[in-house]
Every structure is written in structure tokens, then in C-alpha cells.
Length: 262
Image (cartoon, rainbow, N blue to C red):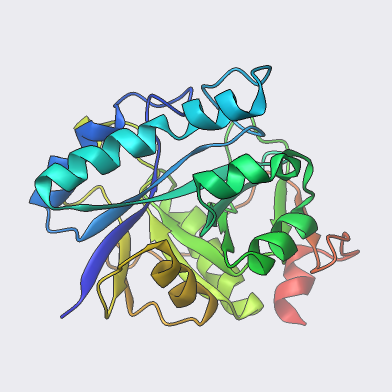
């Protein structure tokens, strides 16, 4: 038996771009046969809904509210809800899993982490880092920034164009890291069988560390994505420049084509 999980959700409570509250997602995903969801609201570096000037304890309490509301509703419905967040640097986004509210309260230095520090410290404390939608091309992004400071790459994102995901799939294979899929959902009204993605695991998650272990050990058993999502059809183009960073967060002096060919 395979267990299906949504890995990328934003709530109105925690994300400025969120439309639905945490509790509104439960029945929708449950009805589609998902085993659970992971709330990943925009953290302090991104499109966060929480006042950044609040004392740290209040910031964390408010930031976690969407997850906690979803978890409470999930408990009533017998549906699992887990916690993560999405951090942003220079238009490049990373999903962090395995560090909880109590950990955040004790580690305000998280807001100052570089990409390299985020990767090393998340792993040190038992978590993992996934680069979200790495080849996304939107009006607010001036450059595609790829980082090797990750445990995995989100190769399928239902908010992406298909070609962006094809590049991400090729990139994850080049890095030889795990591949994940998520919907990047902001509204419960957008949840339909053909519009949401996810990952399959062979075992039911008891806690978020089960997902962390699957990512870090590359044991995700499958992805829920449309057929042909990772195919190149001959007309894919990247309109933005690409910046590639190594595991020390230093820029490569090479093009994407050279990176793929080496």
C-alpha cells in the first residue's frame, strides 16, 4: 500500500498570498485519498503574513497558527497534518522540514542563515531542505538561482508551467538528490484531483521526521504528477539568466548547458 502526501501548502494565517485558512484544506485532501498534508507557510524571508517587527515569541506563535488550525481540524477528522516552512533568499525558495515550533522559539538565528547555513544547520538538527520550483519564471524573479545546498529538488509544482518542471527534473538528476512534488496550493477551492501533486511513501508517516528520512535517504516511492510532466518537447526556453551555486554557496563560472554536459 502506498501513502500519498501533499508537501507544499500555504495558509491565510501564515502566508500573505494565502487565501484559505488551515482548517479548510482537510476535507478536500481527505476526500481525494491523501494520507496527510504538510503546511509550509512563507517564512520571514518571503511573502510572510506576520509582522516581522513582533517579538520573536509572538512572531513564531502567529506564524504557526495556520498549521495548528489545520492540525486541530485534522485531528477531528482523523487526518494527519505536519509542519514545515518556505524560506526565500533572492527569488529562490526552499522548503524546510523537520524543525518544529519549539525549535523555532529556541533558534531566532534562523532568520540570518545563508543558504549554506540553512542546509547545514537544518541537517544538524535532524531536518532537511528542498529547493522549491527552482526553474520558475515569474515577473518578480530576475534570475534563476540554483543551489546545491539541498537534500532534494521539488521537480513538480502544480503552480509551474510544465517546461519549468522538466528542467527541474533534469537538474535533480544531475545533482543526484531526491525528487519531490507538491502543489504550492494557496486556496482550498483549487484542490481537484488533476490539479494537486504529491509524494508517495511506502509507510504511513507517524511524524515529520519520517518524511525527512525519506527525502534524505532517497526512499520516496513515487510522485503524483501528470503523465509526461518531465518530458522536453523541443520548444522549452529559459528567458531568465541562470546562476548556479555549489555546496559551499559559491557561484559556478559556467552556464547551465555546461553544467548539464560536464
